[in-house]
Length: 155
Image (tube, rainbow, N blue to C red):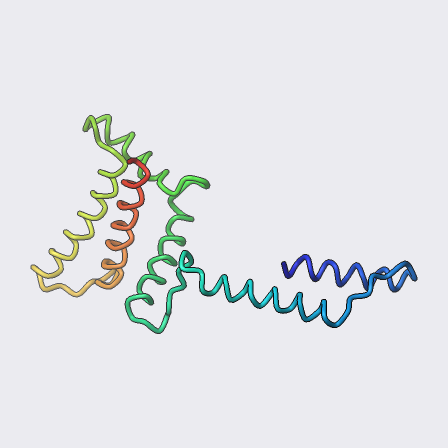
C-alpha cells in the first residue's frame, strides 16, 4: 500500500509540474488513507499467524541464531530452490551401498556425528580446538529442525 501511495504522490507531483489536470485530495481523504495504512500496520503486527521473535528473550534469541546459521549454511550446501538438495544427493550416493538410505537418514547421520563429537569431547576431557561446543549444539539443533521439515515434506 505504501508503494502505491508513493507512486500516486509522485504521479500527482509530475502532473502538477506538467500543468495537467491534478486530482486534488481533501484533507479528510488524506486522514482516511493514513488511518487505513495505520490499521493495516496494526493488523500485520497483531496477526496471530505471523510470529515475531523477541531477541531479548534468551530462547527466542537462540532461535534467531538458528535461522541465521541455517541460511548461511544453506547458501553453501543446498541448490537454489531445494533446501534439502544436499541431503537428497547424499542419500542417493549412500543408497548405492546401503539400499533404502533416505534424505532423512542423511540428516540423522549428521545429528549423530554432532552427538558423537560431544561425547568424545566429554569422555576425553578435551577442549574443542575447532568449533565450540555451543556451535555443535547449534548445528545439532538446526539439523533437528531440518529433520522435522523434511519429514513433514515427506508425509
